[in-house]
Image: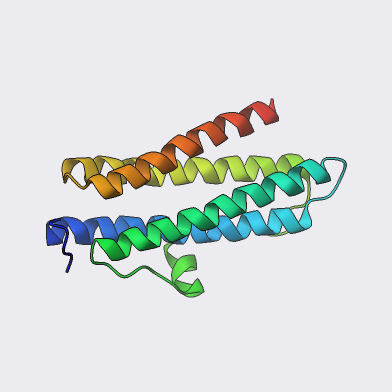
Amino acid sequence: MNYIGIDEDVAASEVKALNSLLASYQVFYQNLRGFHWNIKGEKFFGLHEKFEEYYTAAAEDVDAIAERILTIGGVPLHSISQYLKESKIREVTEVSEARTAVESILEQYIELVNLERPILDQSAEANDEGTNSLISDLLAKQEKTIWMLSSWLR
């Protein structure tokens, strides 16, 4: 049940989509931590710092998504097994080379954007400004990051 006037069926559908996004974000976050810890080579210093910036932002985004799920009357996923089951992003292991790490991060940001666009459409149709605003803000940051990562890879 929610107290903010969003139709229960709409809220349930949004919770499902937001939980999928939350799970994907959590796997993405851990992948970023792994890249941060394991990066090697001459680009170490710059990427180590950049990956920390990314995972710090991702942690804040995870919290915002979970709190939105609660706001609309849902229960956010909160176990590793649930994250791994529901995530559209897969775990990345044993990556220490700069280009491979950046390519992987780019692909994961693109996947997050692909998960968010339908939520944006659904929340707009439902007049759910809170969810729409959250997803819009995430998309704006991620689209810029996608551009920047793409530029780095050229």
